[in-house]
Length: 539
View 1 (cartoon, rainbow, N blue to C red):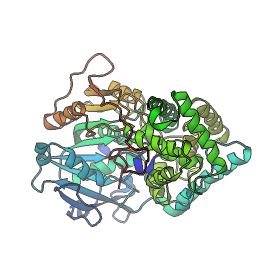
View 2: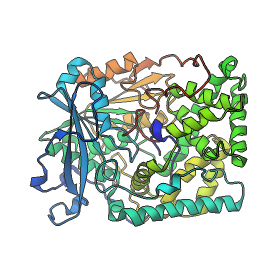
View 3: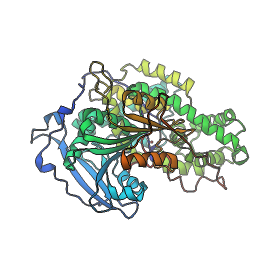
View 4: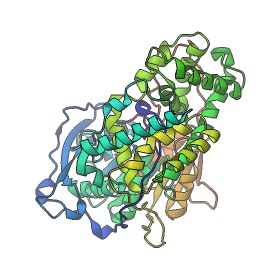
């Protein structure tokens, strides 16, 4: 399942026969690493700038490629790129952050999160972000095939057997390119691998425990980390929760339906502002206008760059945040009503997937394809695609092909890390935890947060009612932000109730259209990643 960023917003999900079973790890399997690599040498960052006046430092942590061979000093290693934001003094606490993805770099989230804290917490906290193994500035990185993202891409909705064959060829070629250009790293890219990296990072920081804030896929990473190393966690904030009970293939199919509901909310909003957009006075009329445009682009892409797949990839951002609604609505109206494609072309340049997203997509596949098992037969995928398209035509087929590389992925898939007390399950974290979720989140449906709450006896769930933004904390909702900062300040949580949530915050009002319909104005500050993680994105 994709937990995406605005800069890389598309849909995603799954396949591949099972070969190896990844046993559930225990806290006793703490990562071993060379003592001379434990001392972090913090220095001025060469490629990152602070958001405000905080001190921003960077370092590198060297760890084993294979934690099970960590004691072998001649073994292969990975180098994690780190960033730490603070006031420059001795912070009392450390907050480790992750933006989601999987595959999204996370160093840039350190300074953004630190800047978003109240003044007293900025003094108290150092915020540490890291580019997970295979991503961003970490070495080695997942490298696949940047040319796979060049426009115009094959339409995601197959109309003939030839279309289907071309899409399968692209998926298989991409998987092979990842294997050819990345090598053994692909065998060690699971969520469990990254969770073990996180505990090694905690130890390298010289800390008995850390606080953690994870968005989107980062919630599943946090759930696994706290399960494997419960003594290494103190305060745990999980925002926009991935369903811990549903492996990636099934999660992505559910996600397509959730994104459809979120897109319907967008179409309804556009219809309520028909005097501005002129796309129809009902959600159904607006949806038909969008789907007609997608069909037209199949025959004649905009300026030779925006075809149906590109349109889907830029439009899916409306399922991640309502702050994208005025921008995308205006761009669609410019083209459909006035015949002016420039705003959509500009939006594709700003937010669509391009060759520079190869590492993010490759890293995403590298985690999801190995975290759990995928179907091996094409007929299973195609049947699921037809059903998804029938129920969720906005993104159903696109989400199938986003994950189809998993059907022929070179690295073995493992067993899903399932929380619970059943055979082979990992025990859920029993300490205090704060879960945060918007009711209308399209990327990660609300039931995932409710399922995780059921596993975690100490967890409290805060719901943003009528919210449609993926990644809520520090997004400007005073009610949500007050609960999050209160928990970070003193560990206080909303009292757990017998209902489906423990605290309720009203979402801010839906945005108003812009004064002018052109979408060439600046994009929203927060527009969000199932895709691909925290709304402000990775680096």
